[in-house]
Image (cartoon, rainbow, N blue to C red; front, side, top):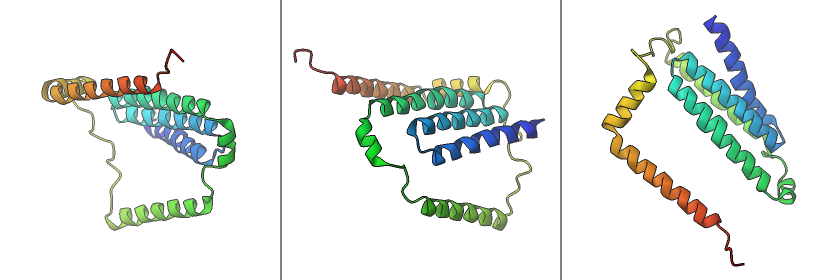
Length: 168
């Protein structure tokens, strides 16, 4: 049963990625990207990494995809139509991708990579979300707080930069 679920999630993920690359409409490409992120989140669930799966859904499928869609909505359509397709040289991109795939296959054969145990014994005792929280807030609390302050300053800077003058 696990193999069937994996193959379904793999088809969803790879199909969504191909949809992003092949789609000529940027809005549809963003929707394909959301499908890819959902497939990746499903793969994380299969690896018993529920925390990573939820981050994948909330941060990537939620926030980043919405940000991309909103950015495309405020772009000037006349300039967007003048740009044309995303990649004017699809043949070179396909050849480059095939070369990377062939290189990875050669490396896998050269180093005799055994995939029979891939993804096994990755689960830890108890909830991995609890373990991540314990490590984050016990050992890395100061860097976590500094990151929160940096993000707050970036948010305030973005608000100040986009604020229009009320008097005009």
